[in-house]
Length: 316
Image 1 (spheres, helix red, strand yellow):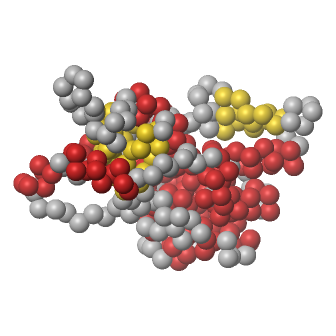
Image 2: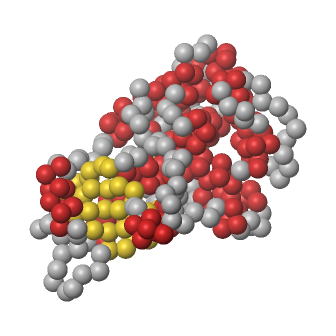
Image 3: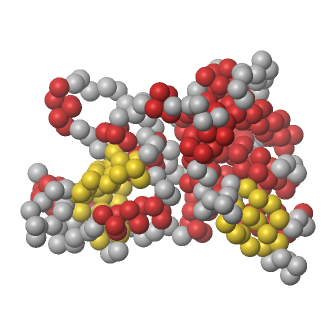
């Protein structure tokens, strides 16, 4: 069975080069455009705007189920965008508080066409905080980096700290980014720990089986690949999302033809596999990735309708 999969793979998976920062920014061009409106045109706080953008991108994936929110928002007058950002900031404050807010949302439910309330966000605040923090880690810090540099130059601020990064403007005017305390990304569990005072057992709230968080990788025959290469490649490309890697067990001297990568977050499976099947080139070796399907479980359980949607439909 593995050999037939490899035969198909060898003819259908040409090399897929790593996206450069320029390509990644181009893919997220509409998100970058909206972020510029928030901090340049509307003069909103940079750190808060980063969180607001992460909140909107999270809503597109988890609540709306399509890449339409940011695109629709760009058609609105700036005054209305500002009002929506105010409500998004209110939502963020709500999920960070110990008690639910009794204020009501007036614009967001109408704009997204969903009955979203502060109470509903508060009830799933663990999921919201984790999703927003990971969105900042995986997307926002990368696509807004050059914009933040430009922002610092324009407003003539000497330094701003955010998300473990220190944006510093030297006397020469050159803006550099230095890591402070944490390397590069926010730590999801640390962020939750700050909010919930260390009293929260995440497993009580988030109980997704490893099978549902697993990516299935297949390799080309004659091009052996190691676990280290897999970890380094996917961590460099998508961030620190890997919980465990299980390589195929084969007799000594034989090549591993597949592996299973367990992600920390279920939604990262769709990010990596693009909601179906996608191709990568790891050190010149072809690799195909798709969501793992436990065939043994399928034999004993009726298949359930999948409610997940791909968060990586090309943005327009």
